[in-house]
Image 1 (cartoon, rainbow, N blue to C red):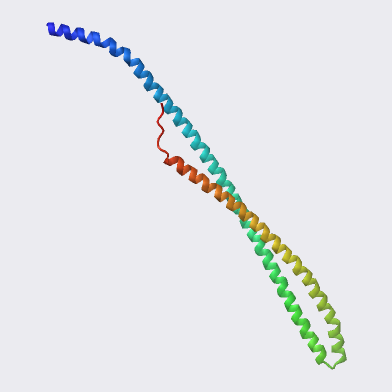
Image 2 (cartoon, rainbow, N blue to C red; image 1 turned 120 degrees about the horizontal axis):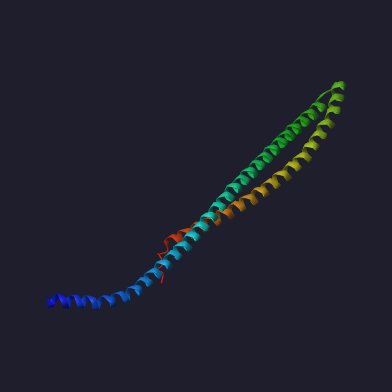
Length: 180
């Protein structure tokens, strides 16, 4: 019975000492948890901002890809129109040469007169096509420049997206921070 009394007395004496330390330990634990929650909140906000930035970049990238596609289409059309004008001009030049050869080979005055009347029309049309060819070449050069500009913008956006991807990878590789 004495033993039980001393045991009871010992527990009673030790209990206040243990209770006195508990609030300090609990307070430190709560502070550590609070710091951890704050860090998690900050990390979550950083992640949300990175995701939003990525979404914006992806939208801009899609839009720019469309602009590049339209610029490429304009360039293709300009090249096609230039090729058509050049082809037509070459055909008319060959026809004019053939008509001139016919003029020197004909002895019939009516045919010669018709050929001589047709030659200025050929030459006028060839000159018009020459002017049109120059305009089409200018259009093609302008379309090529516009395509290069749009491709450069696309490349810049892709670089930004690559940098953001790298930042997110680095963020994901960072070890969990210990809060104090």
